[in-house]
Length: 195
Image (cartoon, rainbow, N blue to C red):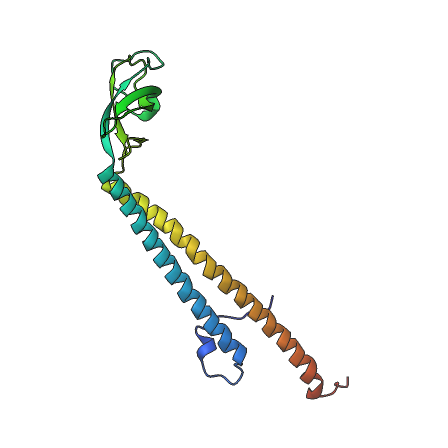
């Protein structure tokens, strides 16, 4: 790697008799890479966040709660207190009717030891299939922000890495050109000194 002295901001755009065309090209490549990196990251992040939030809003509108009945005894001992988290619940087979009246069966989380016929609230999509409870607006915003942020960073990585690779290639080419010019003109600068 070449030795670099202290950095001077925007040196590639300053008028300088030692500045070559390669320096100006590298400056514009760096500027373009940074602009595309920022734009790609921001646009991809915003578009992804908006899509995720709209999808969750659509789920809140379309998904409906339904009352299902247990068709088998839930595993575990019966507990009279309500379950405080889903980790304290168990899976059991339930039956419910869709909006069109068709009967469906599936697995749902219930309190341990619940008996046959115990009513359980489940969430269904328009076709009557079981789904999870839809996200609240604040949960949807949080999830959309996180997913949008990840998508933005991933999208920004592509032009950033491409710009770094192109800059590395330009720098390597510039160093090779310096070596060629030095080999060509170095001997013309004078003879050896006598000691």
